[in-house]
Image 1 (cartoon, helix red, strand yellow):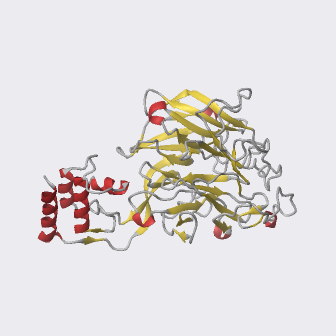
Image 2 (cartoon, one colour):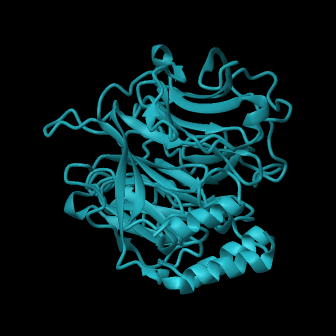
Image 3 (spheres, rainbow, N blue to C red):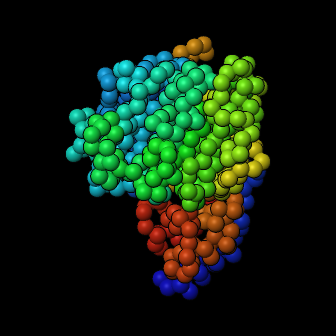
Length: 470
């Protein structure tokens, strides 16, 4: 069928009486994806894998959920419960806390974990997938970094590869309260309270140190000057869930506060690093010694000192709030109204907010979940950029199980709404024709939606599906 015929057919069908199907007002809600979990703390996808979601449970288990079957695999992807310390209670900050995949996972099979061991210390390790894509090799662990933890809290847990191909790993300040060891501001021989940037593909820069097995990116900010070469940023307390904006490469760091403030820090892609985010002299936009617990404590720097970087957002502990769970900038296709909004939540209150990428006016997302869903440990992304939430559940009354939810639009976009404006109309017909004819340059969402029948191809069958779709 040639271009003239395609346009003609779609136009005739439209004019022939189908009319426009306009959507009414839309809201943001969530749909339950997985239930019956035990303390899930993260959900993520592997590169170029549109079907599977990997679910991390705090005690040391990794499960696979397949969209195609809408079910969790019977077998585990990995079970390291025997070597993971903590994670066996709702309020434990220890356990298996983070997971990410190497950018070349399809070829090398490498993925990376962040967990606390039986002694409570942090281990950043690499594992390999087995011959079965649904099973990891439990004997393949290789240590990347070992860090002694002086206390049981502030273990963070996130890790991910940045757009530059380096592995970013944050560490909390070591725990307790008010950073008693003044670690977050100490940049020499002290990795706690920092964001690190590591080259896990290069030659080992520390051959004499079994606890460090990585190279140093040559443009890290403290290379060649005073300061640990691994450090990318410092002045962090307990950055619980960070992320890169897949659209811009910008970095978001959600740092848990002491008694009064929670904060979102932002770093634009291309930044040279070396930023000081202010802990333990500042907590959000206030002085840290204003917190009752920290009043009179010694601080590692002066509140308001030059060079300290303020967060782009902070919030107080009113209405049951206590601990931020950082999220992602939405770059999916299903909720066009949320394009470019950064989502985050509070673990204690269950409140969810979003704000424009880079900072701006914050919108609270009310009634996103049914009553009782509140213990949000993490957000996650699938391959398409759609957002998910890990709800830890609770063993305290009212008892709830761990669950994974997907953030969705209500009503959902019709499959025939190619341009995602909320209506099925002649504009969608015209856009579908352009895609099928290869006229123009199209973004990923347009190409995805032009595969109207979802068979992986964009062809004449999509025309019929478009016609048949209300």
